[in-house]
Length: 406
Ligand SMILES: Nc1nc2c(ncn2[C@@H]2O[C@H](COP(=O)(O)OP(=O)(O)OP(=O)(O)O)[C@@H](O)[C@H]2O)c(=O)[nH]1
Ligand SMILES: [Mg+2]
Image (cartoon, rainbow, N blue to C red; front, side):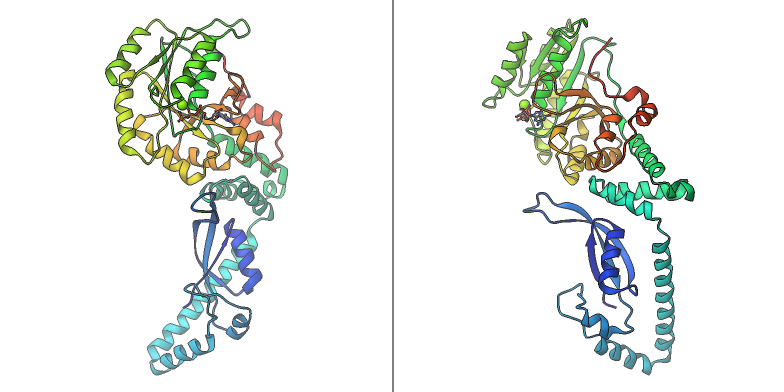
C-alpha cells in the first residue's frame, strides 16, 4: 500500500487540500505536527502533516491527476501494482480472504472518516483557523476544539459569538499570572535570568525606576542593583548609566562569595535587583556555573526568567526547559511590542504550567512595563471579537494595571 502526505496549517486544512486534489475516496492514516518553511532553521512555522492512502479502485483517474508517492516524485503505475497483488492473491485462497477483509476494513474506515469530517461543525472549523492564525500550537488548538466538542451544546456551537466567548474564556484560564510580591519580607530579592539580548538589563532598570523613583505619591523603596555582568564590553556601562541616572548604587560581582557579601551589605534595602549575563540555553555548562553563583542570593530570592515574545515556539520550549534548574517562579515576557501574535507564547507557557509576572512592550524606561494580565493577552488576539467588559468581569483581579504596591 503506497502512502502519501499532505501538509497544511491544521488537520482540517490538510484534509480540504487532499479532498480538493484527490477526491473523497482517500483514507487518512495518521497525522503529526511538523515544522515547515523558514531559512537555515529560522522562521519555520508549525504545521500538520497528514498521511493517507488511496484505495486502488479507479486508480487510472488518480494517476492522471498527478499523484505523488511518499518516497519520490515518480507517478505510480497502479494498474501494474494491482495486477501483481491480484496475481499473488489468486494463487492463495487465504490471501484472497485476507484481501477481501482488508478491503472491507478500508471501506469502513473511509466512510467513518468521511462521516466524522461532515460532522465537524463549521463554527469549530472557523475557530480552529483563527487559533492557527494567532500561532497557537496544534496541540493547544486540539485541546480547545476537544473541550468545545465535549462541553458545548449544539445550540452554543451554532452561535458563533457565544463560541468565541467560550474559546476566549478557556484561553484566559490557560494563562497563569504570578502574584506580585507585596514586599512582605525585606529585602525583596529579584533575580532576572534568561537568554542573551532579551531585555534583562532594561527590565531591571524599569523595575528599579518604578519602585525606587517618585511615582504619584507612592512611598519609595530603597533599591540596590547588583550585576554579575561586569566584564562584557558595554554591559557594565549600561547598568552603571541607569544606576547613575536614578541614583541607585550598583555593585559588580563575579563569584559566589562576593555576591553573598553584597546581599548581606544590602540587607537594609527594600529591593535588591540582580541582573545576570545572558546565557544561551544550549550552554548547559555555563548555565550550571551561573546557577551555583546565584545560589548566594539565598532560597528566598525570586528568580524570574526573561524571554522575548518574538521567540519561536520550539525555542521557547527549550528555553523554558533549560532554565529549569534555576527554579524560576515566573516568566517576564519582553518585547511584546515586536509581535502581533501571542499564541505561541500562550501555548508554550500553558503546556509547561509557567506563570507570567511582567510584560514589557518597548524600550522606554520605565514606561514600557506592566504586570502581566490575562486581559492584555486576550485583547491582543487577532480576529477574535473581544467583549472587553465581559473579559474584565471574568478575570477581575487581572485587568490591565501598572506596577504599584501598597
Ligand atoms: N522593542 C523592545 N525592545 C526592548 C524591550 N526590552 C529591551 N529592549 C531592547 O532590547 C535590546 C537588548 O536589551 P538589554 O536589556 O541589553 O538585553 P539583555 O537581556 O540585558 O542583554 P544581554 O545582557 O546582552 O544578555 C536593547 O536594545 C533594548 O532597548 C522591549 O520590551 N521591547
Ligand atoms: Mg544585560
